[in-house]
Length: 177
Image (cartoon, rainbow, N blue to C red; front, side):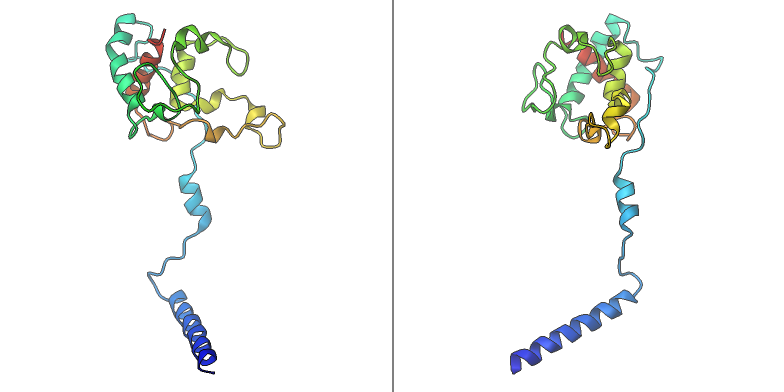
């Protein structure tokens, strides 16, 4: 009898507390759509190499490649190393392709659309790769669908990296012969 009375009292008290809390200012009642929307990436965006990023100049590339290597391996900034391996990387992941010898291997292979890759292509890949994914691979109704949003970090579009950072990482990738 005491247990039933205790249980009934607890239920009533809990319900009363919830009813009061619902009418109190300061009690959070988040809108789930707003919360999720804030965490979603902006749409894919096409980027051009900035004029101060002289990736067609071998001396410029050599000069900034070390910065790119540091960014590539920095787990708090670019975090490329979480998924990719490259020479000198410690704790490299194996989710993405191994970038050892990138310019003589993966760079020479055609892209997802069968096109030849360029330095602009590498820069775009680092900045926001999603525009390089063919539409049929982005459409959830397509049999060729790939959940592209889970493949790689969207760096420049989200503000995670600056244009100079993307330039430096691109230069580093260009040194992987």
